[in-house]
Image (tube, rainbow, N blue to C red; front, side):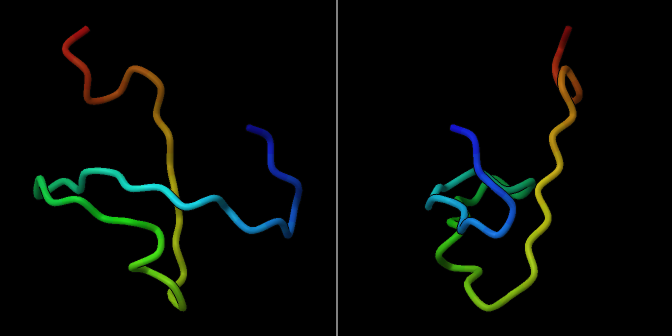
Length: 44
């Protein structure tokens, strides 16, 4: 899915580094930064 600048992100839930689930909805009103590191933190 491709987003345009200024377009709201779709809702999603991901595991945190503590093993808990965090949803984008639960962070509403806060600044959120997503960083993707291909192949990082993998056993490869």
